[in-house]
Image (cartoon, rainbow, N blue to C red; front, side, top):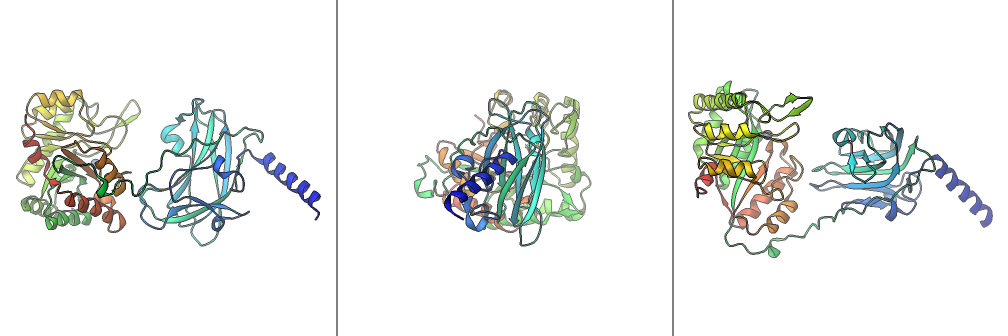
Length: 445
Ligand SMILES: [Zn+2]
């Protein structure tokens, strides 16, 4: 074909694409730098990921990646209630990536919250080759724009290739807006120990591991592994007990709790009666929020009774459970903490606030508060050494850190190894590991 005819054919083809749907560079053959935003350092446009054309998108990582990939498309105008369909092709490891619809209001802020997040298509088909996926979307109230967000799950590993996106049901002449540039990606080597700012003294570390409970008349093997870890390393820690199953504890579970307690490395603390949510005006609230004083007191009392009856000692530290929405405690919880005869320390779920200061000023309970950026996990259940070290380096003045984790979600492999990396780092820092109540006793002013 001569060049002139070829050009006409190409123009006609490009025109036909544009007429079908308004997403720019839908198959990664256009101005990708303008129309797609890569928010992590492993996602890339590559020929190896092409389904059609020359390029496709490859996301994910073959090694442990606490953050997951984050790629955003251009944004297209929508009106509330508008329906459309997104289709695309994908291949790679199943169940470690999804394509999400994110909606934004006219000011560019995300709308729809959890509901918008449910508009997600998981890449879950097994097999070597390419599979086609489609996702139906509907713009929620307040939405002015929609964009695609392609994400490999935090803590997953595996590569996924995606290509040839089509959005149908939106006007073909809808004018796209480029995605905002990614938030500054975290440099992997940003905070190596050699570059850490000096500290006056090594910090105290209070390890706060959540959600011990009885499972099949015993405790989950992961907890046994954690208790062994701290005993073998001679490091102190705190494990939070959900107490409903303590009241009905069977001999195996009781034996493990007692032996672990008696070994001296772990303090068991009170992490709620049932860790459940309760409904108030349609919202699912956390266990210790918006319940009466009497109801909250009863939850403390029956848990303390179970501890005394089964273990022979009461809990002296409290850490409220999460789940649901909203705050994890209220004014009644503060009163109960003041009134419970045994409670001395509170693993506060947030930085110290007025309610905490007031309670602490009464002289009985010590608040051990949180520094958000310094934690074992990035996403829940996903230990993140890089994030931890970066937070640690940013707080050289802080004398203690409460580090939270959910070991039942860690398994045996890469997540547990990432946790061990953080422990090794802290040991090298000569950090002092303390049990919560013991540390609280040093904090009375
Ligand atoms: Zn919990």
